[in-house]
Amino acid sequence: GIQVEQSPPDLILQEGANSTLRCNFSDSVNNLQWFHQNPWGQLINLFYIPSGTKQNGRLSATTVATERYSLLYISSSQTTDSGVYFCAVVTGGFKTIFGAGTRLFVKA
Amino acid sequence: DAGVIQSPRHEVTEMGQEVTLRCKPISGHNSLFWYRQTMMRGLELLIYFNNNVPIDDSGMPEDRFSAKMPNASFSTLKIQPSEPRDSAVYFCASSFGQGIEAFFGQGTRLTVV
Image (cartoon, rainbow over all chains, first blue to last red; front, side, top):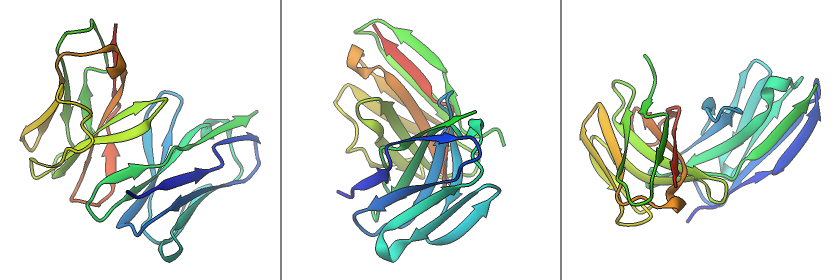
């Protein structure tokens, strides 16, 4: 089956720093989503981005489907950005497969 | 819309007991997904429905697990009998069509002792 790899697995930032999270996938996908799981366990939709670039405030994402990767950019990080960031891809059979996540901690 | 609603939020049960988790998808969404999250295995897709019909249940771990969707606004995930290794957070998600953006409920934290 399709493999979804996220990097880095863990990331510690000083408040105000920028970061880039990466998601690689091993096969063609129909769609891709980025989620943030906050410390309370809630999965929050960040981006629905099968291709191209989107921006929402301090966050932006780019998916290059032909090269099988997506990037999530966090600028001017805040302590509330802490949590786990998941990439999820939708396969040809419409199954959604999650990566293992990037655990982010932003220090004040 | 209130989003995807799951109940209960927390469940503690004894080994061997039956457990039923419930999910109300977002109104108008016709795809529904059940996931399980553990530290060891991450987020795993257990089963998904489209138009109330189970499409892929290959992620259901054993026959002790079953899921139903009797109508467009309600689904259940049942574990019978429950075992300690079933302890996890179970999420339900829904989307407007297959392969379209999915939205998650708050999850049910299940502890089997």
